[in-house]
Image (tube, rainbow, N blue to C red; front, side, top):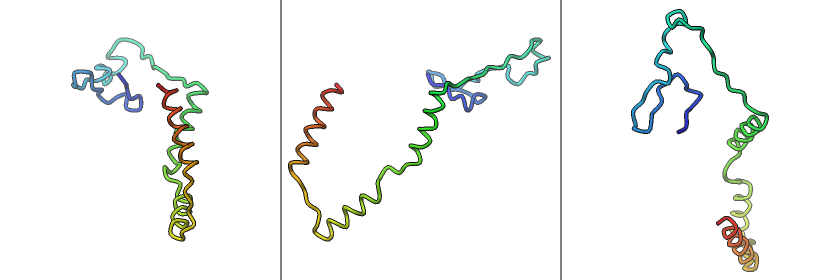
Length: 103
């Protein structure tokens, strides 16, 4: 089960589909509880921080390379776009090999 740590004080949905608060005593003060309050902390490793930064960078990169699309469109419209059947066959072969390695 995944817990969203960004919304830790919001109710979490359990496997039965019902929501329940993480800590039922969260609204009580430390004096009411009769104990000293302990705060949980999360420390991210350098690798985790790098992954977060990379995810942010990837999120800002457009999915479509608009410059390449414009170039291909221009070449298609002008009749200068050439299709190499050898290149297509080679890419299909590489893709098939990749799929076989992945399984």
